[in-house]
Length: 339
Image 1 (cartoon, helix red, strand yellow):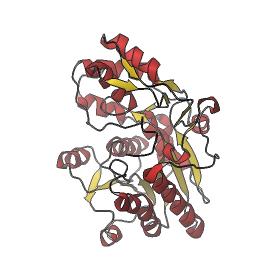
Image 2 (cartoon, helix red, strand yellow):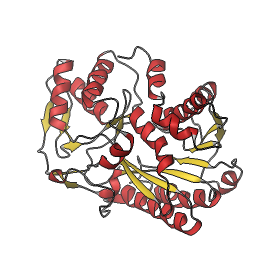
Image 3 (cartoon, rainbow, N blue to C red):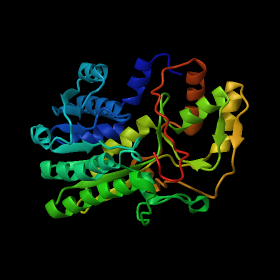
Image 4 (cartoon, helix red, strand yellow):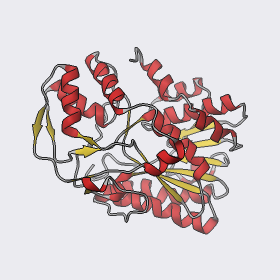
């Protein structure tokens, strides 16, 4: 169990041996675009710690609007250089430092259904700008499993070669994002790896926290989206950074999540047992859900280090002790693609 946020963040940013080995071979700086999101700070810190462990001189530079100055200061204190930048300002983008290694984490999801033009600008236009600015580098591009759409539980989850069937403006704009990376990778020969993630969890955010809070507060849990995947944030970050060893032109694609498919009902009932609460359920589980099959990434990088039962135990303890949270529900239960 974690006693403080600082202890949690230290664990979330701890590099694996695989990350250290991968980054030791890269050479040059790592630029993290959109570092201010939920995964960005721990990924940037992990990259810096891995470079230090490998004894390389490369810098890690985090770029964001930095609405939180506290986050910016924290990153700087941990050796991550920071640059304030509106990524949709092309002049500002042009002024960013050159870097041979780029992690693209920028994007828009929540509010996408009410701000469609901004959603498409962030998710589809911006990747084309980034590809033209960093056409001489290699790029890790974060995407989402939402591009697949709902699939039968019996399928075992979508694999990287499945056709994309996005539902809603957000998912469609994310397909647009991938198409831009594909186009410019082919046009300029940019080595790129696209990561389709769902979902990364930690104590302050994620599907597991959403369910734990509903159980704790006695709120009804809709079973319509009855199944999900998840993985511990440290593992997701480690896989993402190791994907630098998988970049190619044409682009490569990796699903990033845990190995198992989880039942919403079963997970909620386990939280109920740990929290001393009886879950309240509404609706009925569908035989389709938004599911990823990450077998390819797991073959490449090995099994996740933290299991879902361990996450559930940690999160139950965190909720019970009123630990800090990010107050950003995932809305994973949405079946109509509206966020």
